Image (cartoon, rainbow, N blue to C red; front, top):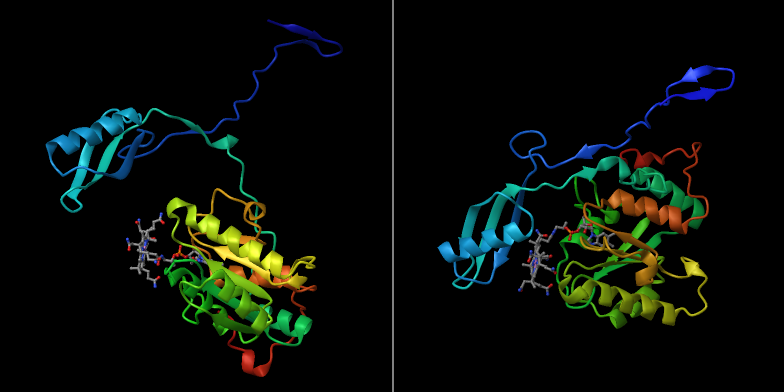
Length: 285
Ligand code: B12
């Protein structure tokens, strides 16, 4: 079909540009749709269990599928890895680009300078694993000097005073300690997610702090900043839990320290004229 366009003569309309970016999984050859999936079934290992695993894979859309690994997990359970083809396509272009971090990533030296300039005292952080959770590795990765992923933890920052209460701390103990220490921020870790324990515990913790500081204006203004972290908070927001910030898998101490500066200190941008103290030259990580 042709259309007349005044002044420009006859034109052929162009097709709208295809802006999709269609992708599919890649196993052996590009775009072959092959995926690997692992799961456990509550049956003893054997040929019948393998058949059940294949039936499950088929019902999940893997066709063809094969059991590439089956291992007994005690007498009554079997762990499987299944490899198979899916026909689903993803339009990658339609997936929104996640928001960038809303604050700059600072070096430990910049964090120390910002705290010294704004507070003229140490910034106090109280951390714990609450409820029955005994997984301290995550909170220790953020707080302990040894740190995580090549970065030193908050204990290393000379202007941050860290109180690490460890595992299985009750909400009442945490609130009491945060008050006693006059904490600027409370850092809570929740790793166990069975029956959504991480969500219940975090909401309970947040509610207790909100009740303890009823006149608070916001995190850091009238009450400690409430920060929670753990590997499985992806599905919820800060508002859902009543906290100021959620950190997920792979968080590094510098991200947390930079956030504390951003959220708690009025002038969070390090001053270029701030010369490092002579004993701080090697503060940078
Ligand atoms: C080590 C470990 C243990 C150790 C813990 C030792 C310790 N002192 O921490 C021991 C052996 C004690 C243990 C026990 C149990 N464990 Co365990 N454990 C693990 C394991 C293998 C690794 C966890 C870990 O250390 N990760 C490394 C750290 C660095 O990662 P992270 O915790 O995610 O932390 C990072 C971020 O999430 C974030 N972050 C975390 N917290 C915070 C806090 C703040 C404030 C911030 C800013 C950031 C932040 O920053 C960290 C660094 O990036 C996981 C499986 C796995 N591969 O993850 C199971 C796992 C967590 N355990 C599990 C279970 C079931 C248990 C037990 C119930 C087993 C049992 N039946 O007894 C018990 C529970 C004990 C209890 N009361 O809590 C399950 C949990 C399942 C679920 N859906 O909840 C897992 C996932 C294993 C599994 N697949 O079944 N466990």
